[in-house]
Length: 253
Image (tube, rainbow, N blue to C red; front, side):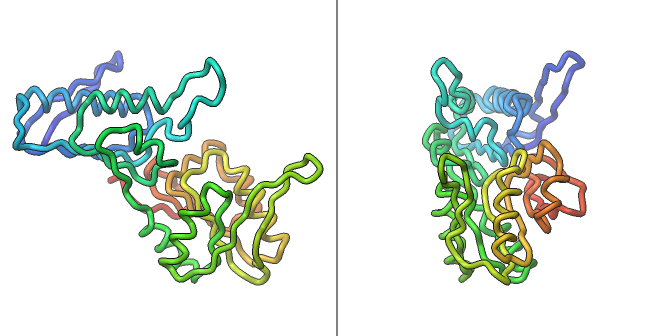
């Protein structure tokens, strides 16, 4: 399927179908502009095909907007994933693919959705580092990291935040002395949690600490992370990063 996108000076987005066939939109999906671009293309495609049931429409989102806001955290606050999911559902795609969603709630709320696995990117980082110990950063990430460890035949060390006399501390539940460690998670925004975890791993004798996240936002840069983390691996699902400290795997052309 071929189409053209035109963006006007006032921000309006318009689409034109140039070749009629099945529709497959692949997009980062991490901004409201992305969402409206999707809607513009789908509206043009629907009009061109006039509800032709012999063609199909697929949407691939590499970094789903609002996926961390998967509940109403406080009374009278908006449920942002619900807003985004309703918008996507209104477009009526036959299939929606989401790369490494933050939680299963995204898949439950978006019609016809399925997760795209991130295992191949973790495996590439794992092999490049040289078979490190895998570290899950919290209880929520343990199940997924455990599945990856089994596939890679790798050792796994869980970690978690605990409170000791009311103060938060990081608990490392395994021996990392003399070992290289790879922390695995879905998304990094600022990265302070990963910095603190990496510091504790090195305090307990880890020789090097690496970080893999599928969605690398890193909205506050890398200076603090470089103090304790040896290298970061991520995909370019959120943005392209030009920094020798980061190795990116291409999912968005």
